[in-house]
Every structure is written in C-alpha cells, then in structure tokens.
Image 1 (cartoon, rainbow, N blue to C red):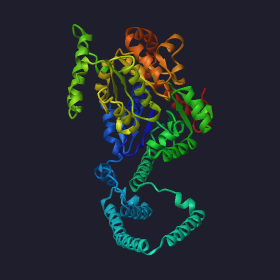
Image 2: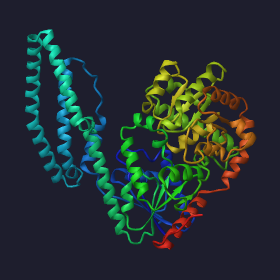
Image 3: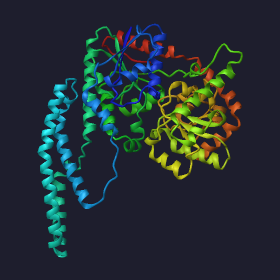
Image 4: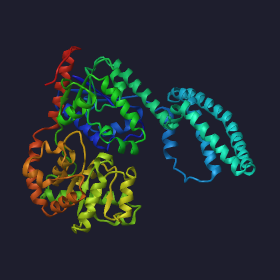
Length: 554
C-alpha cells in the first residue's frame, strides 16, 4: 500500500526538533516497520531541508520526500530581510505620531494594491518578480510625494490653527469633530474597525496557500498513491485531493485557550478559521484519545463519531541516543557519555553567558521539562511552584526548560522580577541526543500541562532513560494513571503549592517513585510504534476498500 503524507506549514515553522516532528517521524517509522506501507511525503519547498533532516537514515525505497525544487523568491527575500528587522523604540512627539498615522494609511493602500501582485511575487520566475517589484516601486513613488505633501500640509494647518483659534473656537471645533466622528462611525464603522494584517503576513499567507495548491496538484497526479494522510487539520486545501483522505486531529488548543493564543499568536483567528474549513470539508479523521475524539472533534465540530478512529500513541524511547553497550559497565559508560554530551552543549550554546557556560551539569541536580512555550503548557505556574519548592521547601535543584523564553514574555518577566535567572535555565532547540542526555541526567521530569491530545510523551521519554515523572491531573492522564499512583505522581496544575509539594516529594523519594511508575511504563511499552503504524495502515485499507461508499468505525 502506498500512503501519501501532506504537510503545508508556512515558512519558518519549527519541525525537526519539536514534538510534532518527532511524532510524525515515529508514525512513519511505525508504518515502515509494519512492512505493509510505502510512504511518499509532500512538503513545501522551504521545509524540505528540515524534513530531510528529520527523516535522515530512513530507507529511500520506503520513503520519498517530494516538493518544489525551488523556494519562491519572496520567501527567500523575507527570510533574509523582513525576519531580521528589529523593532525600533517608538518616538512620542506629535509630529512623529502624525507621520506614523499617515504611514499606516499609505501602508494600507499598498497592501490593498499589492495583494493582487502576490501571485507574481511567489512565482519561481524571476522576470515575474522583477515586473511585480517595478509596479510596487512605481506605486510607492507615486504615493510618497502625496504622503510628504500631506504631512507638510497637516503640520502647517495644525500650527496655524493652534495659534489662531481661541479656546472657544477650539471647543466648537472639538464638538464638530465629535459629531463628524459619530456620523462616520455610524456610516462606515464596520469598515473603519476592520484591521488589515501586515503586508508580510498577507504575503506569507498567500505564498503558503499557493504552495499548498501546488502540492495538491502534485498529489492528484500521483495515481499510484492509495490514500492521503494529513497529520493535522490546518490545511483546507488538503481536501481538494481526489483520493481517499484522512486527517489527524491532535487537538484544538486555539479553541481551548482562545484569549491566550490570540495574544501570543498574531494569526490565531486565521488559523482557527482554516481549521474549521478543513474539518468541515474532511472525510475521515484520527484522534490520539477518546477524549479528543468525543469532546473536541465530535462535540465541538459536529463530526460523527463513526467517522473518527482513535489510534493511541506508543511509548517514546530515547535510550538508543545515549545507551552504550559492550563495555565492562554499560551504566557507567552511559553516565560518562551523557556528561560529555551536556558539557559539549554547554560550551557551545551557552558560551555567551558567563554564568551558564561555567555550570557543570554533571554535578548539578535539576528538574526537567521538555516543551515549547504555549498557553496550554502552563509554564508560569510551574515556575511559581518551583520557586516555592526552592525557597520555602529548600530543595536545591535547577529547573531546565527547552522552550524559547522570548515566546513567553510573562515567564521572562517573572523570572527577572523574582531573581530566578540563575535557577531557571533554558536549553532551546536541542538535538535529539542532547535531549536524551538531559532526560537521563535529570533528577525528575515534570509536566504541568493543562491540555494535551493524548497521554504526554514526557513520561515515557523520561522513563526510557531511567528518570521518573510528576504530572498534571488532567483527563488525558487520569485515563491511564489510576488509584494510589495518581495520588503520588499527579498534582493540580492550577496550584503552585501543589506543584511545589510534588516536586519536593519526588526529589526526596526518587527511587521509590521510579519503582511505582515502572509497571505503568512497562504496560505502555507493550504497544510499539509498529503497532501504531499497523493501526494506521489497517484504517487506510478499510477506507480505500470502501471505494467511496460510507463506512463506520467501531
């Protein structure tokens, strides 16, 4: 059976060293191990290097990675120019504010005009790019003198009005302005309140959409592919493929935490709108847990349950990255190897920080949480709980996180305000081998998440290298963790005090916690990624065999 996988993430998406990338790699590995599926993966031109790196070592006869050979020129320029522009401090003079207002007006005019030229900019043909650039420069050249004259005129008018009008005249003028504003708002309020996104955002949206449609055309030309699979539900273009299709529904965090995501992700409403379109036009779906299938996908988006197949994860195993075999003492050899890995990372990635570059992690106890910084990850409450454990319960361990702190300003501000800069450390975007070493060297793994699509990977990742976990008491976890074990290892994620108590207990009773969690881990290990692959292939065969007729999942 030939299985097509479709991904269409926008430029600058993180994939190879993130959880989604590791999950996709595990699923493809499981399909390959099942010996019943050959995979062709379609991806955007700007992600090909990242995807090839993600699947390095996979047999080429079982996995093909296909996409455009050339990255669109507009994406290459954006990568080099727009993404590197730093924000300048704002000036507050009246003249500056006036200039800024006019600049925004001109920018909106350029956006409206330039949108029609995006298809030329996103073309691989440099002549089209030069032509569209010339048009844009011509428009800018026409608008620039107009804007300049408008600025000069308004400044002169403002100065004259300020010196000529009496207080009473200004009051009357203010009243007229207020009435005029009311009339305009009544007549054109909805138009004026509509905010246009930045030009670069519109460009990237359109370029991504066009690239997705190109991938769809490629998919429709591959007659030998039996079924197409999308690992998420953010691409409505996927449903234009003329073949059997299945979309995975990991979660819908944007709807679970709408305010938080809207404030941290500029494009959150647009992403959610596209997800709804993809789900509404979809045929069949998979979910990682019954909770995600029933409560989220079915109840929230009205997808019939007989169109959803629940395929749980298998346990993650990081031991192959750090285990040493064939020595007189393999455990000691692994211990030395992980120390060397962390030393190498410290000396290269933290060399710009005098304090961090001098820390020898092989002699430091630390708690570890591997995750991106997203609203559902609950990192701020973790840090609050850690601070209580550190300063009130006197546990002497660092906290190491793998997220990018610049993505969480509230976390960064709290760390600085409470003088935790030397206690909370960041190992962002570490390769798999260093990630495994961090898990292996950690005294305790902690996961404070508020919501996941299935049972969190951090538990099996830690246990695979001999490190126990404490976790949030959420439905996706209590589905697997029962009775006495739940009381020992689970905490209320909304209570920093409870987090602190579990941290302190886990550090003091590490070996006991490890023994208590081993039966659960062994049970999880009974399910392999080959089993996950076989479940996917079995589902795909059932859908293909139906050949357009309605089928129902158990």
